[in-house]
Length: 93
Image 1 (tube, helix red, strand yellow):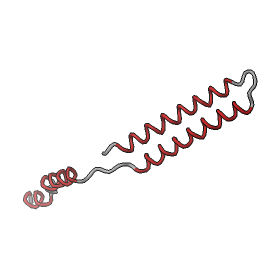
Image 2: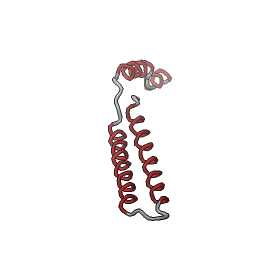
Image 3: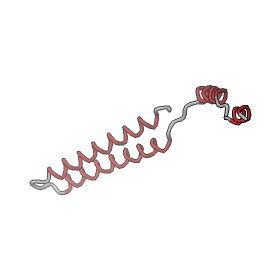
């Protein structure tokens, strides 16, 4: 009865070694979804910058610099987010 139990046990050692070799030889791929999302954030950053600057130029008044600075801060946040996402998408896993 013990021989039957030994034969019924899964023999994974050879399969695991073959899978490890196949994983090492498989070409690494980029993550296109992260790259596309990063490009989207770049586009949003450009539109935010243009909108904030045009709004400031068209309505030049006293005390409007806070709106310009908040628009520029959002531009920086979105552009850095886009850069990070594109960078992560290009890293090959």
